[in-house]
Length: 354
Image (cartoon, rainbow, N blue to C red; front, side, top):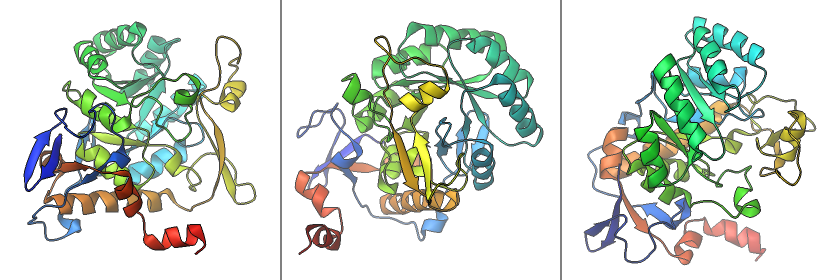
């Protein structure tokens, strides 16, 4: 993965040896990818295939395990497009039924489980055809997470994703304790208010740099608001990027359309907890929000925008594959003025009503 930063006049440095910024304080908007000489003739030439656990994908995209984002319809459509979905936690019998159907049809899917009854659910899901599971916890640094991961790996031999985590130290523990893939991101999600409630988090680009440095495959989870963020996450070393709220409002998301809007909620929202029998009080408070997003048509349109941005970024870097992109990509730090320069001037004119 690339951790190279441009300085000036062709000179570069390597993260974390940055002179102009603290290496642990970087988000996607703090950097740009530097254009380079390229022998890539066309964006259509670049190869975006990846291997993710037991799955071969043509697009490094995975849908978040949110009950308003990823259900059967989303899983099937993403599979058709060459991407991947995660079936959220919920009624085990319903999930087992769907797992059997998808497995019989060869539809790739990851299945989320929690800590409570996690081993038993993983065992049932494996019997139904599951190959990869997600230990879906907000704080992946808990010791019980790796304890469960080791038990599942030893006794069930399933591929295991766990998280969320954000630091090199946590990623090293995951690598040592049988976790195959780390889900990375504390607080950057579009539906997440953990940083506002708990004051806890880690800037997302730095989190990717930190965790990939431990030598474990990483899912970049959260903070992807536009195609450029997706491209930067992959360039920084993420094996795959998790998309949640950006898929909100698409035809394939669960839920009804009401007056042209669809509901999207975080799994830590008060609404989700109420519907799933979780009490909010002194020992637990909501760390997610609920939004109503205008409908936006097929999810394929969003996937195409993301992939178009990634392909363009790869061609600018002179890279013909994801692996090549992660070797060749060069970042540069930007100023606040540059952040404004990144946006079309006419949008500022419109905004300021000049």
